[in-house]
Image: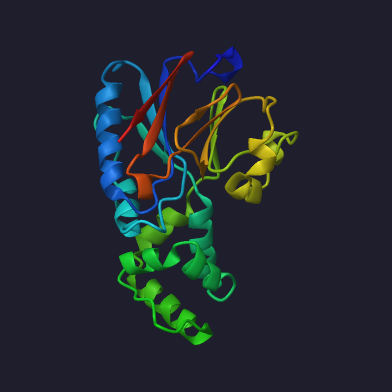
Length: 245
């Protein structure tokens, strides 16, 4: 990736970003172990890990991922930062308004796997009555600290010349004026834009076979729930490197 001084983390800081997890706590454990080992190369630096969202849906153990991310970071890591993905956004919308998008989340976007990980079964026939029943059952199973964790996920995180978001940024719009729907859902308008965004944008959301390390953005969603490859990007000064499971 061509380097740009405007795209560097703050001095004396080592950053790691982790792509979309989707219900694979086993891969979270593996990538955290690899990051912790890698971070020992520069123990004097302040070290942070940013997870880019999409912890739930599709994979077998969404709850396990959430519970793992709620724990303290590994030894040698100063801070673990968790961003919201569009799948957490769908889950939270289901919690607040189960019939507004509940069908689509459960049937089309992997929500059934999330409900199952909390012990809520999918009925043979899915109608509004069954949706409301699953909603009540989910609320009964969801621990208060789990809901608090989900409710406090950040939309973006900025470190010097690097901005971490789930999906991307709307080109031509200042960072302070980006809207949540774009940060969580944008694809083509962001991915097709080859120009600068003011900062290096590190994102997930769009699956690629290999990480995309481009001059103005870095995409690191490698479809972990299906491929078994959870990818992390390391950033320190003008250096960039990839770790993966």
